[in-house]
Amino acid sequence: MTKDEIILANKEFLFPAVFHYYQEPLVIARAKNQYVWDADGNQYLDFFGGIVTVSVGHCNEQVNAKIHRQLDTLQHVSTVFANEPQAALAKKIASLTPGGQLTKSFFTNSGTEANETAILAARCYTGNTEIVALRHSYHGRSATAMSLTGQGAWRVGMPQAGIVHAHNAYCYRCPFGLTYPACEVKCAQDMEELIRSTTPGNIAGFIAEPIQGVGGFITPPKEYFPIVERIVRNHGGIFISDEVQTGWGRTGDKWFGIEQWGVTPDVITGAKGLANGSPIGLTVAKPEVADSIQRLTISTFGGNPVTTTAAKAVIDFIEEQNLLANCTETGAYLRAGLEDLKSKHEIIGDVRGMGLLQAIELVQDRETKAPAATETALAMEAARENRLLVGKGGMYGNVLRISPPMNIGRADVDELLKLLDRSLVACAAMAAGVAK
Ligand SMILES: Cc1ncc(COP(=O)(O)O)c(C=O)c1O
Image: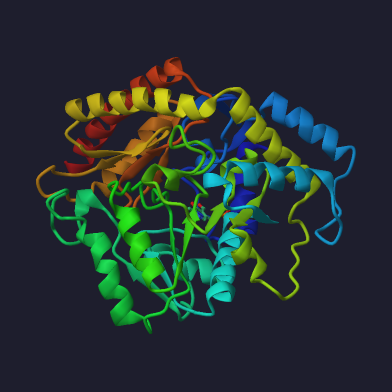
């Protein structure tokens, strides 16, 4: 198919809700390491990694060699049979969870299903129904996951009962109009009032992304999760950490994002970067929580030998290459470069994130913080022109998200900074043209 035929077929044969970045969709033909090539043969630096999913580089040779071997050995059996790749992955994951305390895994095909399983476990374990999620969150696209999600644009259909939304720790736009640390983390303290006023008092659990991904890499202060954890546990709830974007070392030094706040959750969910592009969902829980799901359950493709081989190969690669340290070191270098760009470009209102999960929030005016949504769309187009892929996010559509493969180095960051700088200059020129 030609590029135009692909775009046409997308329009004609896919649900229109399947949206694409850019005014003209970008057709990607192939990829290797930190680069992708479009259908016309143009090369792009990929600092979004297929939405925080290409964790160890496109078509990673070591990972793919293991996938190929497994594909020719055993491709599928379903969860009603045991197989070695699933067992080996579950054993490995148990050893990586905080304090080795979360030891039982359930595998599915996506982050959505991982979160479904986590909510089910919370309700079975506690006997309570109510779940507290966060505003600005994103947890997936099933009925439950959309009801957990705290952004209207991603909630379709009838929201489910039994889910309430707490304020998030969005310091740049504090929901209480306060400033950290003088605020005494009011957003966390407010959890008590929320539970007392909108639930029967006993809750099943709390679910949060340590850093809100689709929300625009919103990163809470260090006190936030410990305070919330105490309140949630006092009300009988368990703590679920949605690590679909923050897991596997991306935030630096730790395997899971929530460890940066010193909290040990009862359940962790994972997907995306765990298998570098092979579809996988993971719900790993403390044994007593996992054991509370007593009825039968099945996931036809869950624990698939090929995807679990891929995931184990990714974890092995992360360990061998010491990528947790690279996320810290190269992440700090990236962060410093983004702060430099902030001092040059007025449009950057905030730089935030951890490790190799960094974002810039664009504003029309640093005083009013009016979201620069139009300019962000223009910056995306300019980045494409400059052969750079980054992500867009934030409830107001004004955040550029940067999440490259975790095995990049300083030279790649230098290239990103150069291309991003150029794109922001072009964006300012385009915005001036639009305003005329
Ligand atoms: C934090 C988080 N949780 C859950 C999901 C849903 O994952 P999936 O799209 O694999 O269902 C996403 C997807 O972007 C996510 O970012």
